[in-house]
Figure 1 (cartoon, rainbow, N blue to C red):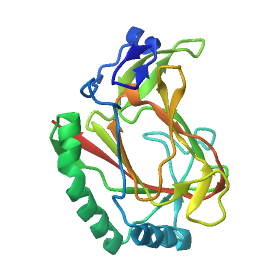
Figure 2 (cartoon, rainbow, N blue to C red):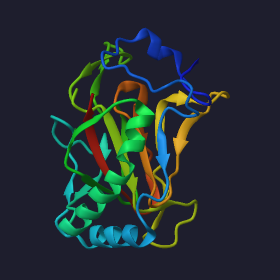
Figure 3 (tube, one colour):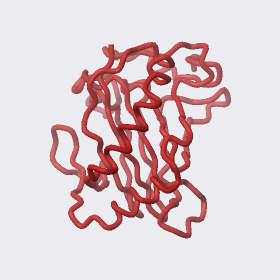
Figure 4 (cartoon, rainbow, N blue to C red):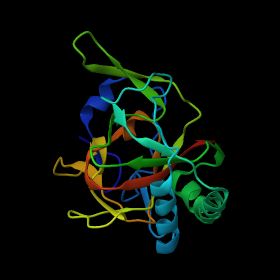
Length: 230
């Protein structure tokens, strides 16, 4: 393991791979990602979640540049209403400067916001947001090929909360956000269980490859956006 922040390490295999888009934040941060709490209020989270649950026109999320493969990703994409999009943009503007200062960059154009719903059994296997993994004949990872270099920063804003035993549509179990190549000093893989209203922010490159573990119960909803940066 090699330390990349005060409390987080990266697994050593990353050092031997070609990662053209490698970038890391200031190593003196406690963590190499941000968790911004309370970006949305509870009532705003509830309204956005209710709209997604009532959406009858959701479509299954496809893979970037590939056909739908439910062995890799099982997620629904919903449409964000103009009213809720305005709320999102207002809340994002309020934290934009803090994000830029943390990562020492200036944000450019962002993608459209994706509203991603995960019902029971939904998941997304390991992936990097800006690159595809390159594998040898035995299936071992040997490097990464950039496929979306305009994605420099990823933001994930949750409207539902993790809990071990969900009893309503505002909570889910399973569905953790796991960073595959990041760990703590005891070699425990970094796994996040954010609350509704929290925004998780991380660089989109392969150091921050991640997966969404299968949802066991309840409903996981997040608003995801990718941003160019300079």
